[in-house]
Length: 127
Image (tube, rainbow, N blue to C red; front, side, top):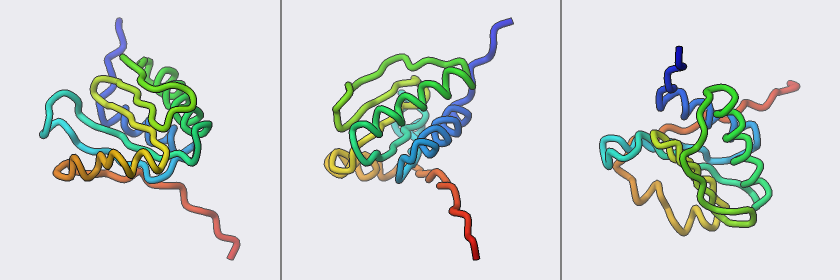
C-alpha cells in the first residue's frame, strides 16, 4: 500500500523544525492558497551567511525526505547564492540572506496572506 502524501501543514511543521535546528531566524509561513491557488504555503527563513543557507536547505531536504518521504519537485539557487528555493508543490521554501530578504520583501508583497511564525526554542535559564 502506497504511503499517503503528507498534508501541507505537516510539511510546514517539518520544514519549521529543520530550519530552526540549523539556526534559521525569522522563520514564517504565508498561507497562499486563498490568494494564488498554485501552492498552499510559502515558508520564508533567513540565514546569516551563504554556508548557513546550504546547511538549512540540506537539513530541510533531509528531514522532509526521511520523515515524510517527499522530495522537492525543484530546487532553484546554488551554493554561494543569497536565496535558495525548494519547491514541494504544496509548500515553497525560500531561504534568504538578510539583504536579499529585505530586497524582495515577500511578506510585504503578499501582505494579505495569513502569517504564522515558527516558535524558536526557548533558552534555558539558570536562574
